[in-house]
Image (cartoon, rainbow, N blue to C red; front, side):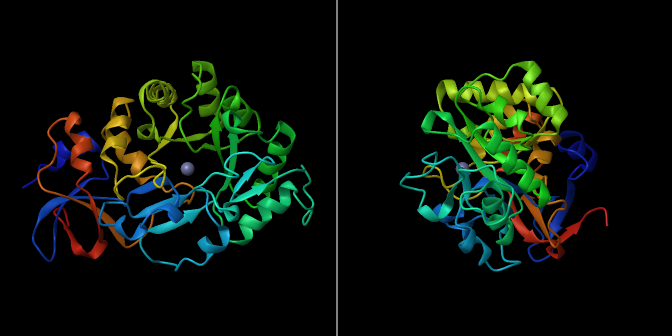
Length: 323
Ligand SMILES: [Zn+2]
């Protein structure tokens, strides 16, 4: 038997000892896990559920293709649609970024139908069912939206009740996103150190940061880890995300990302919270759960490797020990 109170002490109240109805296998039930940053056009999404991921947020793809995905299939998909960027800005022209996945915004216009207008680009993503609007602010890779156009994008998104998520890279880009009221960062800032006061400002704004620590090496990774630790320490809401599709990795939960989050101090119940946050939606998926087979971890250090064994199962397949 699994000691439910020891388990909850380590990973929080959402964890419930259970067994699988069909096999009798013991383990732990958790809410469904979400990878908050993927690119579906670059991966085989079918393998995600077996690898523990029940939901994904596509942060840059073809809005037409994304709108045509079957509803209710696994994994559950929320998406941004196309990247909104400056003319010639990132990711325009990248080999992994077909034309269909970017919109070049040239004008702060909030009138519908203006060519290159902020509202036109946002309205299009909303019409294709986007749950969030993605902007690229990568000053290390070309021109970026200026403060006026960026503010217009945020206003247009707000008109659809959609949050805006930014890829910030290069000096001053975290600041620019914050000043415009951008509500999420697609990557923990890694190209610049975020001062404590700026992290506190991001927390006060209610900004959420998607981790993506494990895509980096060396100094970028160390900087991102410190930035995320500071943000979390200040009370910031951290989301598990891997940028899956970037680089060649197995599809599913990324043990390296779990370990990296743990190293940034997002441990135990905080790590579970980062995995099970429904952002940008307002509720978790129904009818599915995470099953982690076998013995429970005995120390916080064991939690990342334990979570890496997760798989997605229909909720009714799990018989909870306390019911
Ligand atoms: Zn990405």
